[in-house]
Image 1 (cartoon, rainbow, N blue to C red):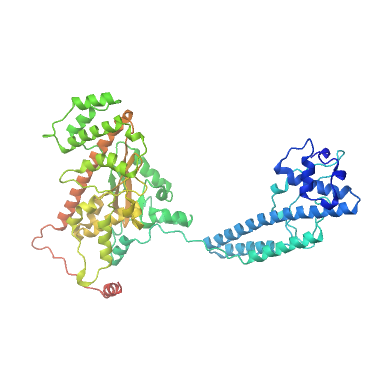
Image 2 (spheres, rainbow, N blue to C red):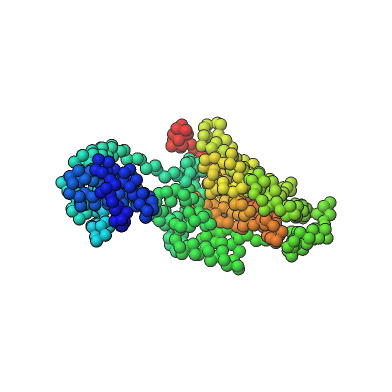
Length: 583
């Protein structure tokens, strides 16, 4: 700030009206003046200090000191507000530390920090450190940092009650009036801060609120595949994962399906806790083109996804691989028209699907914004639901997420005397063995039907598989390792199909089988051909899974011959009676 910006102040200004307004009016009358809001306050503060230093008139000294005191008080108030925010944040952080760690060492450390914060409240003054300025040959020298940009750290706090600024750090001391006002403000601030209640840090939400599948198993004092632990190189994988989870934050633990003993190898919230050598062991098998299954331990496997379509359908699809424009697609549809009176269900499904997408591509419908209802109507119903229209096929109902399984298990928990519900294995076949799930963030979901714990895809799989296990006859329960349940989850135009199995003691393994990518334009028509192969191959896999369930039922209900002992009737134990009476 050059001296000529204040040249003539002795004649233009008077000590009686020496204030911000008169100084601004005076400065803005100068020909070289350009208003800069970021430095205006600094310039006036500098000028007031300058006047108090060079003037020998008592009236000017008093007027300049009063103005400097008012400006200094404004700066201190801003510093107090900044420190107040820092104190509140520190207090809340200390409370969070106390909540997260219960050991004595951290309690002592946090108590010391809290005492330090309390000491900050009792400080009489909070002053910012100002840059040194002094008069040079031209008169006034500008401040390097405006007051509204000065940051106050813990080292800037005055340590004693009687401390004052040195001549170098503060050219003009505050008047008695401004000091009293500043002390009063600080005392009010300290009083209000000491009354602040430390907010309680909310506990992290559990992965699910209630694991009714586990409750049913505990009630019947049984477990799935007892004694068959998931071991790799002598290490219990699940125990190792839980040990790793204990070292993580509780909020991260709550997100993991491992909390309900479900291991999804395509879910980062599971794999991040599992030993790396075991993850690499699984990944190598997935990439091995010569292996037909992924073995999670000896004899515990999930078969890989293979192409399983009717030869007639494959021959028909091969004729459309070179399609890249509407003209070629229309020509292929015309030249390869099928006789629907003799064609198979799958062949009719493919032809109708291609005609449907021809109409969508022709009108650029898939390049527009689409609602959930439009996704279901124009993409997933033709591609998925229509593939299962056969009399013996599974009927897909979007939004029906393990409701029958869930209600069956809830009924078992309310078991009481003669009204005990019975589980019919055959009745579970279609509703449980190949029930379809849709993830909440996908376009297939109907949000009104997905509530509470059933929003978790892995938990839905556990509900279905546990109900299946209970439905199997006692002699066939070991066959649960041969039975899968499937889930589909969508995100935009992408669909993922997954399979889940009980393979170890109360442990479910989930693995993605295949992704489906629906093209938005005719140029990606080959992706639609691949999608058809995936859907039809998956339908064939659900049929094999159904047969595996029937085979398990046959084993449990096979004819008995002479010499074979009948299953003895169980004696009701006292602890069972107590458990039933407490429900």
